Amino acid sequence: MIKQSELAAVVQSQQEQQQEKGVGLERDLLHQLPTDLPNHALIISGIRRCGKSTLLSQWMKKIDFEGFFLNFDTPKLYNFELTDFELLDEMIVQSRKKSLFFDEIQVIDGWELYVRQKLDQGYKVAITGSNASLLSKELGTKLTGRHIDKELFPFSFSEFLRYHEAIPDAESLLRYMTIGGFPEYIKTENPDILAVLIDDILYRDIAVRYNIRDVKSLKRLLLFLAANNGNLVTATKLTQTLGIKSPATILDYFSYFEQSYLLQLMPKFSYSYRVQLVNPRKIYFVDTGLINVVDVSFSHDFGRKLENVIFWELRRQNKEIYYYNENGYECDFVVCNNKIPEQLIQVCYELNKDNSTREERGLLDAMNFFKLDKGTIITLNQQDTILHHEKKIEVIPAYRYLSQQYNEAMTH
Image 1 (cartoon, rainbow, N blue to C red):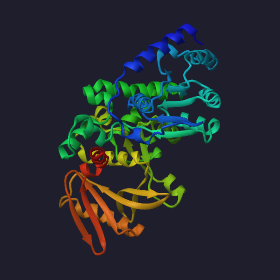
Image 2: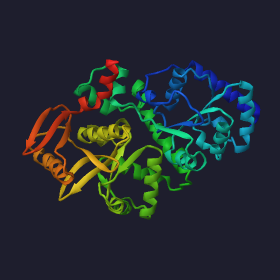
Image 3: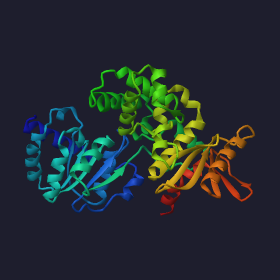
Image 4: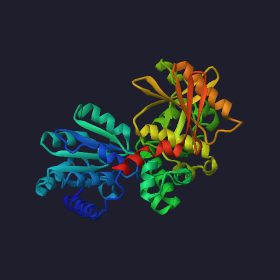
């Protein structure tokens, strides 16, 4: 419970900060946001510090909404309770504003009931949050059919290029893979920013929220996953490796990491969901700059970095993504549409005499398995065409594949 004077002071301070805040780099996602919200709440979710508040500000300016803004993720509101929404209501009525913008509102128990109430009263509501599970679970039960969901990630390669006013080439891609896409880190390149971010997620978003006492094991697992980014993992094997009590505990930790957008686990392709569940999954961290801070050895492994960047580009496009592993051959990405494979992608830093046979065979086996005539190998800086009877493999530079949005933006 808080006092009305305390809430008023927070609201005034944040409103002033919001007005003074610069627009920042226009995010690609901005053009996918609705221009109006008739009876629906807009939900923007994503990892901490990826630019959700800035995107919200850009959207407010774009649609010319003068709204009531409140960020709940501040120590001054840690004692905010469900009953305190009555105080907030009074301030909203006094403001005479009909558009409401709430940052990290999911930290308040019962928030979804309040949002439903405001929608019923005719307010336009936009929310940002950094926990996918909390948002989706509550929205599914209390706001069914009355919300529009969007996900924001750290800067894409095209956004990185526009920020630095750089051209798409191998050099700029290598820089992007080193620095990553967190806006504040891109500005300063101070590693403390990412180190604090990781601690905030581990302790505030996961350990405290899910009442985890063994934080050392939680962090040990995160460090192990960072060191094995792009590799296959299973909960059972990790119990032996890390000394964590049970596979169920590790699966819970996996879930918490994914819900906070730290990483994602990609399943093996199978037409059977049960087969997907029992097979190992591949780990991909949300940002290569973040892994560089967590795992020093990763900083020079550009092959794994490139694969990670391609995964998240596909993820930004809301693709269904799996890995292929049959007949002793592997293909990095099976891209599907409604469970139907449409594109096969192999990723390697450089095709050479030592790896070309392996990379091509993995892709060709997947092409035969899915009866597809075309496949793609993405490398740092190579371009070629490889024909195997009636099968065609296009070798393309990663910076061209990743900069499609950049090229589109430059032509408008």
